[in-house]
Length: 372
View 1 (cartoon, rainbow, N blue to C red):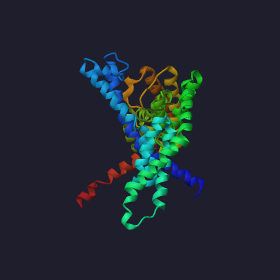
View 2 (spheres, rainbow, N blue to C red; view 1 turned 90 degrees about the vertical axis):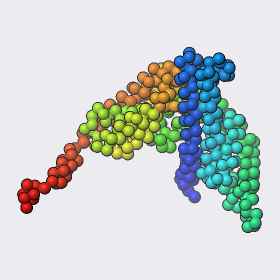
View 3 (cartoon, helix red, strand yellow; view 1 turned 135 degrees about the horizontal axis):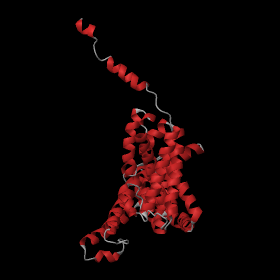
View 4 (cartoon, rainbow, N blue to C red; view 1 turned 120 degrees about the vertical axis):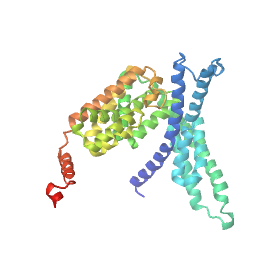
């Protein structure tokens, strides 16, 4: 097997884990956003603190509980990604070792890299066991229900605890400390890099690498990468959707329709809304998306906006610290994407319209034909 094929296989397994993890993270983040936005109406900025669980106000007590639900969901981030990377490699037998290994990674503070390693170790361990253990027909049922989960889990936990756990925990702690220590130009540059990566391939590997790493850093109290990523997620679909409204003549009918959907998807935080434009004209759209996303993210972070949750949609904006600067970053990045898109595109030819009119005329009989 070539290195390229191995790399492609690993990418596929990791992307599978990420795709299963993201809905869990979004569910938890939205629950937390609801509680924190709700608490802000009562002037409470720390609704997660246990003191609010005993509040005389029933709504405040519920908001505290709701925030706890969100936190519980976010705690599943590492076990879920580990479990489904393992599942991608070795099918159902890999889920138990993967999820238990992911929990150990979370407890050891080994971070996102530790969760990836846990899933790969569990998956390939289980695959090795199932491919090489041969049992008599009468004892075959023992393999999936006893040998695979027990031996697979033991090997995974042993390797995490005594081989990779401590080094990855050190890397995670060191990375978090370095990122927290970034100030001024370095902080803005980091935000621009994250934003540019997110805007590059709209839900593809580069985008997901930036977004999931930023999400994972939230568990270490590092918020700037997440702020940059969440700003960048919504800029391309909003910018391209706005461009179709400002000058329809530069887009064919299909892209005009896609523009309406793109605006909606941008507002709810789905960057894939911009994909039809990128597919139709990648050399014009991708640079505009990268530049707009990078500048918008850098501006929001540089001005001091802080998004504590992995939420990019409008329903979480009020939960952002200094949300007005956050929205300025979104607006500036969106306008840059719109301006560059309109600048780089030419007006569409009117051929389609002429053909359509010709077709419409052909649907009717002439006066002579009616008479005959």
